[in-house]
Amino acid sequence: MFILLPMDSDDVQEASLVALDDVKKWALLNIEEGQLVEVTHYDDRSEISEWVEALIVIDESQNVSEFLEEQMMVLIAHAQRNIDDIVEAYLFRELHEMLT
Image (cartoon, rainbow, N blue to C red; front, side, top):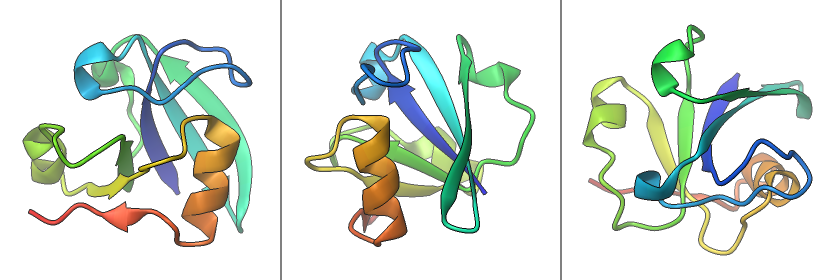
């Protein structure tokens, strides 16, 4: 399963989740059998060829219509900002789905 995150850098340990308007790098997380297998970074979302199941955003105010049109689930990480915390919250179902 692939999950997409808008991040402020490509440093896996230091990068933070940011608003869609502020994205510098897209982090594509490959999660298999409850484990983070790989993190791949992209400058432009159009470079991603995998089917992305979910987008993680910082809050409800984000304009996610294009992602919903692509059949992505949109989840909100209210407090989590780094990749490790987001993955943990995702696996424990602590992220809330954005209601449209």
